[in-house]
Image 1 (cartoon, rainbow, N blue to C red):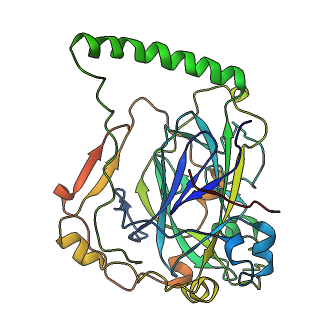
Image 2: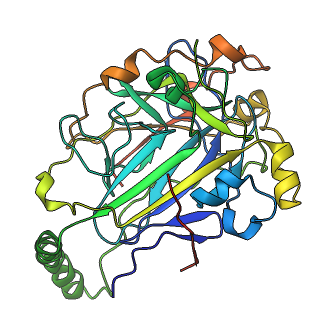
Image 3: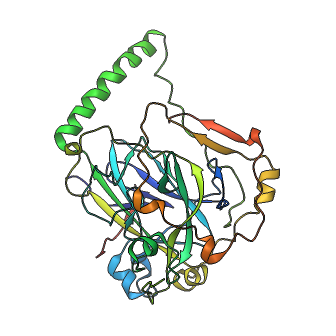
Length: 350
């Protein structure tokens, strides 16, 4: 029997097919100009909603999923890794697709594409709102109208982050496995003839720097304490077009999970844990010479900007600029990058 559940392993979500998703803390970018990819400052802690049924809001028990603590104005990105087999992943900001800008759907679509393809897409740092660029995910409270959900739909009902994973159909998966065997066989023979034990592992993106863990209109309001995702500054990142026919993917999702964004006071009340400290000082980060990144895959095609997301206004219009002045990285700090078990999470109604 195939395991179609989403599982939590430490601070990572494991999806059907072997992909993992990490929620990574980062520096909030200025809302003017276009920037390289900001550094990772460690993972957000994840907890299962089901483990705190007595203290979470009733709506959260009904939706299940996981939760993480996030500060007002704090930025994040999603890191994808560990995929054993190809997967199509939908990412929602509230009930708005972060790739297409269309309403959330339990079906994949190609025109416009409403998903990213793993492992081709290594990260997603924000909404697909420009040619070769995205606008950074930034946490804002529901009720202000600043979220992507509020600006696109006129309502702020859901908040949080939604993830939905699709696997290949059995025939497409068999073709992929056969192609993988044929692709790897010459490399294996070459390694054995040279007396090696195996081919070298492919290059991967560098790990997050070892910074100290820390955190940096007419809109319907929701009573439960919750946060949603708004749009921040622009950065250079492509959202890659799927090269497979849509019929290669299963019609139904193999797994899905609702990720609740919790304010630090609510995190302490719900879990009894102290929330992580506020974000690391960006000036200190830059002075230390820690890296920023440029990532580009010359063999992949970028998706066109999502029409509904191009008009989303930055959160600074509601919550203002960050408290600290911007510290731009020095040119030598921007590094080019090449292509590169747990407990089940209870799902609910959403």
